[in-house]
Image (cartoon, rainbow, N blue to C red):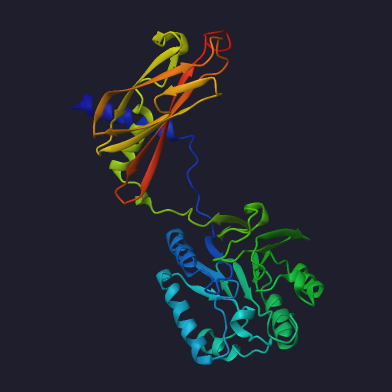
Length: 398
């Protein structure tokens, strides 16, 4: 008994000793994240709905959308119905708070009159406001309050007072709809942001991602949440995404997350994971052969592929030969269809390669096999496998 007790003490001493050098996590005073979304306007409700589902998986502290949530028509009855529909779209957020920013399509009509503002106030409340969260201050402004796009009058007076009262916060984040460079009083706004040490300013409207820093302030325009029609790809800044802002004490980090990239943990079942992994590793018993080892009859070479289907479902595979030049041919067809029952091992698939000329080849064919696998969610995954014919062994090609 004493021996067992001493052994236990020795084991515990060893464990403590082994972990003594590990730095344990130290919780920060303040740590949270929030998501910023761009225009939606009903141009692609399905894309927006998927993005909301991804936000739910990230489970941020709250969400801010920088305007143009709907497309405002002239009829107030219709606009109420649009706001009702929009709120149904964001309902999956559940207890995650949603903070709106008024955009031109939310509060202005086609003549730039604030025809939609009364209904907006009815649905959301004030068109500019602020709130605190942890060690940060958040300011929402309305860039479509008047005939010109700018922050003036009572809103400007309120902004100056609000920023003054936020002094001492580790972070001040500002949100509005139109880009700052399009506002009539851009320089005055930037100056007051610098004076009150604003950390970052977020906006939308122009439907593409744009980033720049000026005097220590990050200015970031996010794209439309539902529209990505620019053919020039992500470098143009036009692709569906959300912004994830993470705050840890006096530091903040902004991540651009491409749409359809935030996946649920059950995206892969145990069966699919095992089957696809084994298909990748074991489809061909041998993945290559030396040209000199192929059985030969004159200018005809026999290639026998040994194929496996380690998955739990029947598969159909398509075999296609890639020929490096027209000096090679395959008898009688370059491609064939082969049925592979579940758990098939060492099934032989034979081809005959022919050389049109007697000279030694400089390049060799390879065979591509494609199999279609049906996942438990009903998605069809195409697996791709290559069988390679190698040339003569050399120092560079052993």
